[in-house]
Image 1 (tube, rainbow, N blue to C red):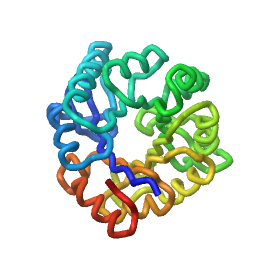
Image 2 (cartoon, rainbow, N blue to C red):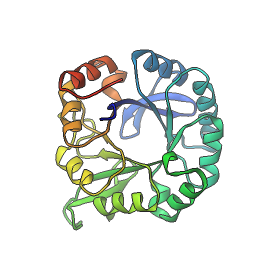
Image 3 (cartoon, rainbow, N blue to C red):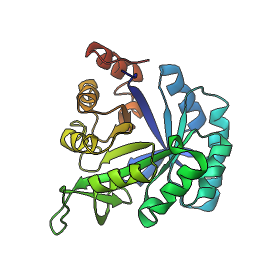
Image 4 (cartoon, rainbow, N blue to C red):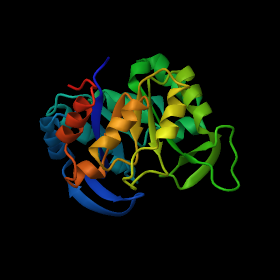
Length: 255
């Protein structure tokens, strides 16, 4: 069995790491290169940056962050947010990213997934699926729908079908963000994880809901190949080592 990856996620705006809730009440949380280096030292298997900059200047600053981080850490870097074209992917890869996350742009133009895969290979694409249980007035076949803008905007798209279609079009990994569980810290959405695992055969990254080490173990038991978290790591409630120790104790291989 391949080692389970533990991945911290850093939200970056205008070249600085920020903390907030649903992209509101943001406050500065430090230098992204320094934080990435600290996570690398802790034993993170990958580092994910989410570019939430609102301006072109902010997106340009993100590329400077990628380049600086790539020269300081020795784990793969994934960068999501603000990717709208093949050209955006190319510029981030040139800056030093190993993988690029796509979300809203792929929903607007699903063919973009195929274009990126044909140009750079499936291994470069992480399709981020921000999913929730359908609220009143929204119906999908699976009971889950895809959302955008931090879970605040409904699309009416069936989340399982979208994940399956994304893989068919060329996505090399699925990052499943449970918007219902996000920030609650009561555990990952295990039912959703299992349902997505049943329809895709690429690596599946679980995100949203982690609060204790056993939550990560539960996610892997439901089929996650990697586990991602932000605030529990940033605020020091858990360390990368805590999560890896729990996974190893449960019999899962870790690096």
